[in-house]
Image (cartoon, rainbow, N blue to C red; front, side, top):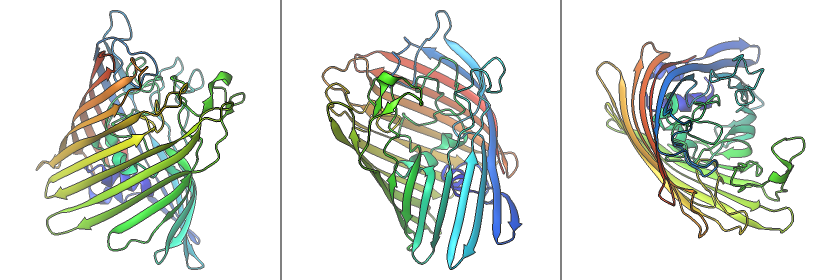
Length: 426
């Protein structure tokens, strides 16, 4: 199975057997070995909201009542991990391990008249999260060129138990409830405990594995900070969102991302400890020459012993914003940066039936500048989940999520969600 799918399955410490993480459709093809892999998942969701609808773009995950007289909604949607179809090829040539991966991510969350993405389906189009080539050797490491999961905060999402479930829902305003997840994925714990690692063009070097210790350093695409409706982005919003007419602000330096981790396995305990960081030099104006740096760092640990598993994670950033890297991270008129931090705690237990139950609490905080009032102050999430392996490939999932968002002027919105569904890996 594709490396990132393996990490997703293993890192989420859910109810998959060890054999599932190594599953895949393996096809020998001359000098190559082709691995066809992926997942299909779908969930029925019920969402109940309380409080006023938050202003678009203020960073809130829970959005409150969006329609007069209606405080609940239902939908059948893809979860945090989108539907996935990946193709990986591996070979050994000239003393090098060579690999390519290409993947696509369809979903079931198309709430349009036709339901096929052909009419009003711009939010539901097939995704492309991976297109890369890598080469190396266990004696000196490996080099990757292309698009793959970002380095900073990647372990935060790979260890989030909602990865195989739903977590928070998402809509066209970066979270909350209007059309009950019009995107082909929900947001899980993104924005309520960690910043999204995203899928980035990168040139990355990973060291060999030194008895459990491994490190990765990468140059990343500097043009991916989000275009939030708060205007706090590296895009020239005066040209609109049309990619054919929008003029992006020129960036002069690659982003820098790095991670170091130590994995251990003993008779009693096994797990992983990691730290990662990110630094971008961001030009924010085409006319004034304004620029600043975006920096963030994190630390996390996952420990498993017997039937118990615990994950703890913390991040802190300057100009890094919330939910997506850079989102609401600075004020576009003054170029002043906002501080942010957050993290999550998660505990799981495997029952005698092989069902894993888990509970998690996550929070993301965004400090205010003097003029900020409606900007989000805090997004909090409680998750209770049960993940049962019906077969070694198929898991039944039940989740309850309670998300609360609060702005700096004290306005609160609450969003409670119940989800039932299944996820199958192959």
